[in-house]
Amino acid sequence: MMKEKTRAKKAGLSPGTLVYTGTNTGDIRIRLIDYDEKNFEENNLKNIEESFPFKATPTVTWINIDGIHDTNLIEKIGKHFDIHPIVLEDILTTNQRPKFEDFGSYFFAVLKMITTHENKIECEQVSLIVAENYIISFQEREGDVFDAIRKRIKNPDGKHRKMGTDYLAYSLVDAIVDNYFVILENYGERIEDIENELMENPNKKIVQTIHHLKGEMISLRKAVWPLRDMITSMERGDSKLIKQKTKIYLRDVYDHTIQIIESVETYRDMIAGMIEIYLTNVNNRMNEIMKVLTVIATIFIPLTFIVGIYGMNFKYMPELIWEFGYPLVLIGMLVVSLVMVVFFRRKKWI
Image (cartoon, rainbow, N blue to C red):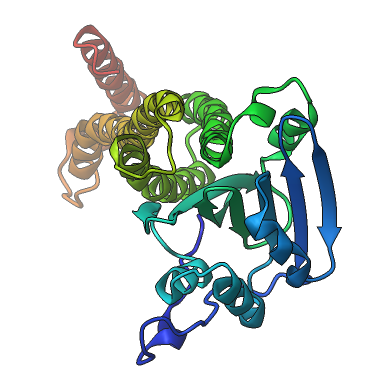
């Protein structure tokens, strides 16, 4: 289950104060891709100042920043690209809900990029600043789901080379959403395996796994549900930066988001059902044990009664001096036991 990063360090500070609330992940990597229909350029930048001249170029520029723990770097970007301090604060506050905000000359979007490592969910905040001719994407650490987009941009005959920043923004959102399907497919297989094991051999270890899955489904739900509203704002909003032909693609992403939400809800119900199945199996197993113990105890009730009678220390008990008294009592006890067993079987109690 992905953990919420604390915001306690920001308590009492004025709005717009730049404080990183995530975890320092090492070196910062800045990658720049600049392209139009005829030209393509890709570079790894040593510092953010190298990207500043691309602000005014007519080409489409994608500046991707891996690692946002350097507040000085974020402040430089804000000053040069005229980004509101509140937006910069949201970029550094890495437990934001997915959202979309239009500032006229640019719009700001926040998403959650989810990956898995050793069957554990890892959630990373991705922030996008989209202007007329550039996009700045901010990630907490290196590694993403955008390699396919980079490959398509390199293709001179690809659609990206003929479209603007709005289409690139759609592509980034779509890549993140499509990766949710991969994550959910893996969880679907795990849930199916756990269900089979649960029916065959319910144990405490499975319960721990189920509770772990339940927590991760809650985390997935928190990441996906606000995404629907974010994409709706992009698709139905009045932003001049998103062209009508791009909104058609955003409708498709919206449909994918609805499918993901439905899958998450289905898996949550299945996990809740597995807990009930486990409890039912445990109760049934306990009932079977109690039934066996009850049958045994019931069989011994008349035997105990007989033994109790002949355990009394009365002097004049004819059976005590009878030669065949002892074996006859044993045979009688055996007959009583057999009769009770046959009776229980006929009643289908055992």
